[in-house]
Amino acid sequence: NEIRVFSPATVANVNCGFDVLGFALDGLGDEMVIRKVAEKGIKITKITGAELPYEAKENVVGVAGLAMVEALNLDFGFEIEIHKKIRLGSGVGSSAASAAGIVYGINQFLETPLTNLELTAFGMKGEAVASGNEHADNVAPCLYGGFTLITGYEPLKIVSLPVPEALYVTVIHPHITIKTKEAREILPADVSLKNAIKQTGNLAGLIAGLYESDYDLIASSTQDVLVEPYRKNLIPDFDFYKQTALENGGLAFGISGSGPSMFTLSKGLQNAGSVEFALKKSLKEKNMLSDSYISPV
Ligand code: HSE
Image (cartoon, rainbow, N blue to C red):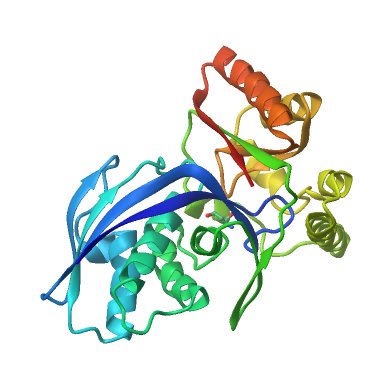
């Protein structure tokens, strides 16, 4: 009657797919212990690794879990221990890992389990508590694993994308925090036709590159003309880090989700390592380094 869930960190947007693209990281993630109990509802009994509310209605885990137990009208409930390993506000899907972890966990106790698509919809309810907006580009890859594309929100539609064998990601976390809600508020509501055309081409190019294992196409397409110009101002020296990553073997560089973490895609572990080495050095010199990770995509 008790399970342990590992819920991976994720990189959302991947530059050209704002709110629609994301992928999961290997190795970095939250852990949760979920116990089925007779008492209905969701009770959070322990939280380690972060200061978060125990009140279910104020906690991402609680909100996503309650959305699910109430919609399914379950006549039992759950006690939850949350062990946060992903730093809050770091830009690698901390809130999504909480939301996806609980709905995935509850699903393990159901006689008729839900699909990943249905779970994503419940997970999005929790994500909205943290970011003020229901988006699935962290929750979906967290649940599905790998690289996911949201082809529609109404109704929700998700496809898993193939990933070239040698594609690696380096994630670097500078020593600042950014709230997703605030990073969304600074974005303009409208975009120009010219930029929409560029971004459409980039998104299509990245997806074609993933299917074809075409690393040059991935490199030239993983660009963001809609969001990065605004959000990069929240990360001191962003352009310098970008230049450093691209000069040291990276294919593409950008803001992970709403930041402040930044990701670099590379071909091969060795390039991913060179990028990490160079970025860590630059961040250390500025006294800005918090964490860094390398993972296959
Ligand atoms: N797509 C979201 C955003 C991801 O960039 O605001 C952050 O959780």
